[in-house]
Length: 206
Image (tube, rainbow, N blue to C red):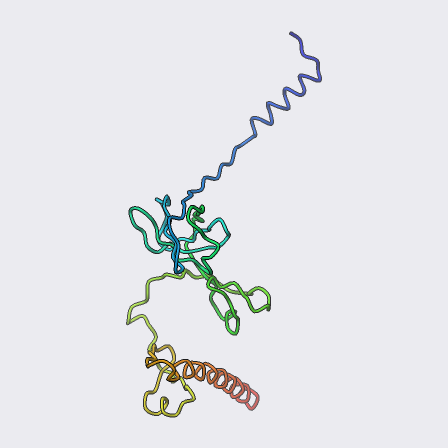
């Protein structure tokens, strides 16, 4: 059987296309929700998932894998779990949860994943760091050397607090714990603004 020049040309073209054709398959490990409640979803079928890995539910909600067990995986849901129900598909992302970090975060309002929700646009000039990292040792840490003024005379005079220090505020309900924290936060803004003005004044006089 003889082929016309046109048929031969088409055959050559098809052979060339088939030779250079590569199939790119993306295989995702899929699990299903066994139960959900109180912000925790139990998922079956994610056998190769890593601790701290981000997953995505069928509704678009994301979560982090924390409790790895033989039968299922405990997923902490980022956001509301009302859109998640038993039997929903859950897909691995293959990436460990990380968030933006750096000075670009100062003064911004973000969600649990570091996405801005204050309407001021995207973050600029920021790095990303994993949520779960090994804490540095005592020797490697910088000592607490700078005081932090809370604005409350009783606290600042009797129980001085340093920047970077952890402090527990404990007490009964409706005793002003939240008010102390809010007053401390607001006072930091005043102290930082005052420090900036003083440094600018010194530079001007020098």
